[in-house]
Length: 226
Image 1 (spheres, rainbow, N blue to C red):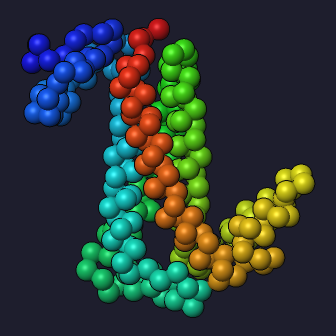
Image 2 (image 1 turned 90 degrees about the vertical axis):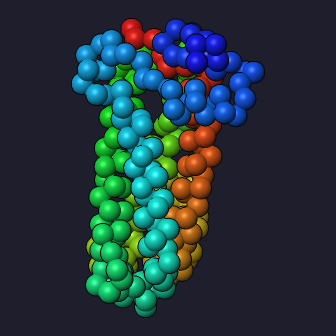
């Protein structure tokens, strides 16, 4: 494979003349990670971006399973969650995996961004890497919170009430923003339906930003160690 890739700094730049078979070999079968150079590499901090993506995939798979049984209706939401836990084969496993992976994904994305910040990997020519990564962090927070509200129990109801109330403190648009998010003045079944829609839209949008994030990394390469 020496003739299908070119060395460039800290990563391998693909030869644009690669065919499909050679591309698969270069990017999947024969692809290697850079050798550890600094303490953060030896500590494993360079793998948290990949771990975050792995958790995103696990969230997508488990979320699709839960989507089959969950009912976004104020009278049925909690009962459908209990049904998944108690009666669906492996339902408890997928639901707990979905909940645990959301927390792990939040932890890994924060560690990844801290590593990028303290190692200066956001500097030119990788400024847009940082911007897209920050947007993905916000989407991750949004996905975690909207998912937390879906069981429609007392904890999720009052968490939703408190957080949406806080939006009213935003000058000029706060009141309108609260009504838009809630679908009215109060937290109702319409609010649950909107947060269910947000919870579906966010991962799709995240996928677009992830593809852009990966493309930029592939284009500029992994940053050189300071």
